[in-house]
Length: 248
Image 1 (cartoon, rainbow, N blue to C red):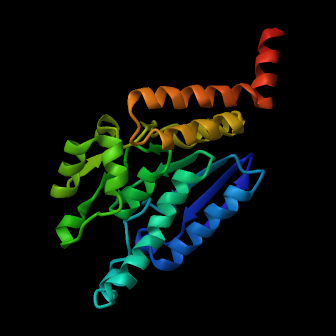
Image 2: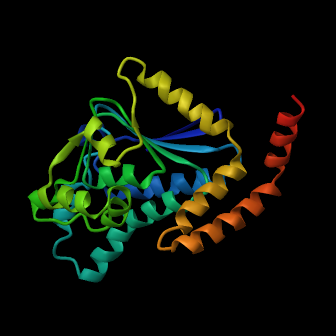
């Protein structure tokens, strides 16, 4: 795992390009530790996940998975939750998380991208859940995927194992946007700078509200919105920004 910080943006790079950045237990532990450090760092406003080399992430390390087949179910569940804890952390950290995807994002790698708040893709990116072709189930990512694209599309993707190119993934709601190939890195930099310049308190409240809306009815969601609205009015960021706007 490579970690760098610049201009309020922490970039975490999955660094196993020879294995298409497949997620083994060491990388998962490093990713979880890096997320915790970024959460606690006052100078970090945005967290970015990228892959080294041509691909974002090919999913779980299959050799490591095969070696675990004879372990007790309790141990395999504990190991599965190591990646599950990464998904939970990405959702719970009050700072925006962004997956920047080039090449293939497959299986758990696609789930890792989906767990981020924003997914921006190069036109050459490919997304999919091919676990069914290996007699496996993308079990944990279903909680993410079903929310992102709905039941019908989610079931189609996991039951057939088909892949989507970047444009199709955007149409399905699996990713946030596809950026142009020619200006890709520059457009990524502009997006991250915009997020890093935004009010941290407003982004934290926004992310918290998104998370809490899960499972809420319409009226309950409106009441939650009123509570968040009231909290936002009391933040120094709001007072300073509105005062500056009115002074123009």
